[in-house]
Image (cartoon, rainbow, N blue to C red; front, side, top):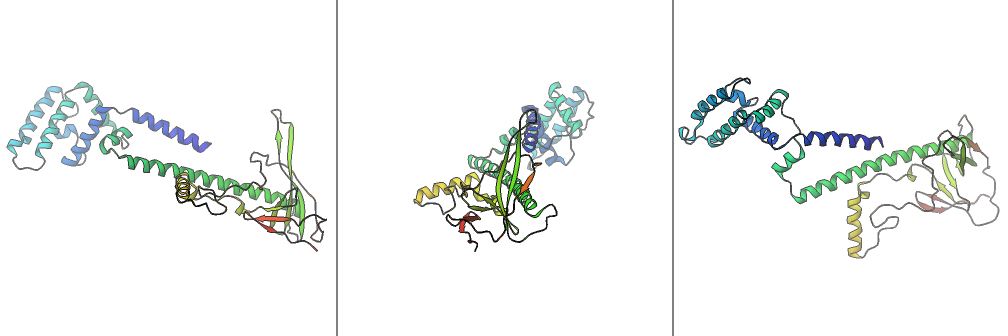
Length: 318
């Protein structure tokens, strides 16, 4: 949330600065750039006319006449760029002799020409094509989606470490000394509170700790391995544009996506996986109950466990 707030604030500031520049400002930006490219870095309107910034309109007119005699194309036949320089001299002289335009130029003369001159300025001069704009938008939105994937992945890993840590603490005790054998524990994922702080509900789940591995224990006896592989890692292939291309390609050739993938190329979330409350209270307590490794299951089918999104038969204890 903080990231999006920061981006929104940055865009608001940028939009304000962009709206501050009008067509007159853009004209001055162009002239400053062209003048420095032609006459040398640091050349200003005043230095080119050889007048001080405090010169009167009459002084500027006299300076223009002197400069125009030197730069007139008829007196400089064959000189490369002389026509552009003579034309530029007339435009600059006109700006300095216009009160409003001169005030705008003086502002940039004292404060400097901005590096970022607004999207309208660059668009009007470079005018990117539809293909460039589409490519740019696809790239930016895909990168933003990838960044969100990375943030969610890190959050999920932290959540998994938190839950497995609670289960191990319940199974091994506060000293966290690993014990052999399978141990069944009950873990409190968190408590829901009302506006007054009263506890409304607690979410307890059964888990199994077997060595370093931690499993969710479902009511039907299924065990679902919980480790770093449970979280969905970020992938460029799962961004919206590539997923859309894959989906259209599969439909065009009449081919079904590979197992474990949707048409968009992303691995679907398993419906058997328990849903973890992301907003649970981290201060929730943990209680544990022990099941020895020699305990035999009573009746019913052999329990299965799911590892890495795939099910495998659990070994029946004898």
